[in-house]
Length: 212
Image (cartoon, rainbow, N blue to C red):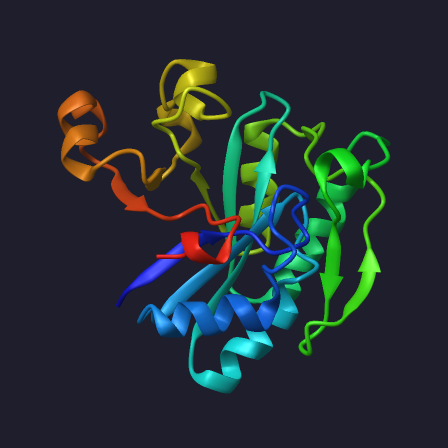
C-alpha cells in the first residue's frame, strides 16, 4: 500500500490555497497512492471534507493533526475517524494562545466543504505552540483511540531530537517520521539506537506537487 501520511490543506496558513479537498485527493490518485493522512496544524476542520472526497474515488483518508507541543515539538496525531480527530482538535484549540492570524504574513486558514467551497476562515493563528506537553497530548490522543508519531525527527527545528536531544522511551512511541530530506538508510546509520522503531517517511506537503 502506497501512502503519504503528512499532508496539509489550505487550513494550515503555511499551505497553498490550492490544497483543497478535491485537489489533494485527485493528486494522490494521480500519483498512485492508496492512502493519505491529513495533518493540518493544530486543527482537524478539513478532515471530514477530504475523507468524503476520498470515499468517492476509493482513496483511504486518515484523519489527523500536526500539533506543536509546549516543548515546540511537532507531533503527528492520527485517529480512526474524522469525528475523533475533530473532538481532539476542539480540545487542542483551547490550548492555543489568543493570537489573531495575519493572513498577509502567514496566509489564510480556510475551512472547506466537499465541493472545495470556503465555509469558514479560522481567525486564531494555528501555527502557535499549544499549552499541552508531549505527555499530555499522548494521553489525550490515546483516550480517543489514536496514535502519536513524532514528526520529521531528522530536522533541526520543531523535532523531538532537535529539542529534547533524543526520543525518550517513556513516551512509548512505536513509529517515527523522517522527512524527504533524509533516507531510511542514512537515518538508520546515523541513529542505530532507534532500530526498534518503525520508520515512516511522508511528504509534509504544503503544495500539490509535493504530494508523493
